[in-house]
Image (cartoon, rainbow, N blue to C red; front, side, top):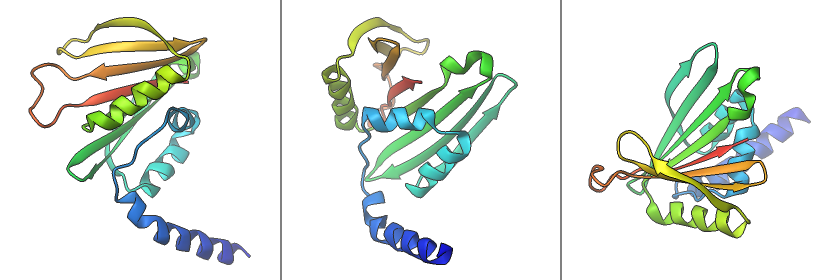
Length: 161
């Protein structure tokens, strides 16, 4: 039975492989699901979607793992931050895109889901951000600096648990 399930799962992945080669578009619900995953489950999910390991930082307070993927000359980067239990409310997922249209679709989805504009500001380095809140949920959208590398702007969505 176990071997049959593995064979079926492998067949499904093989059939779905062309879809993984396309530029994925992530929804708010998918990003929230990524935040809830354990680091090991997160690794499995992003690897199954064709992402490659990029970096890892581990301290007593936080573990951050990064994966990236280039599709159709667009770069997608995921970073999952998992904090020590005393700071678990800061656990988040960051999705960085060079595809402005996919980023704007996510912004529209957040607005349509009833999130209200909240804090706005500038990050050292020139990026600007806009947070949206709904009850205890927070989503931050970070826009590239005006002088970002031409053709390679990075649009980032940060979703907290």
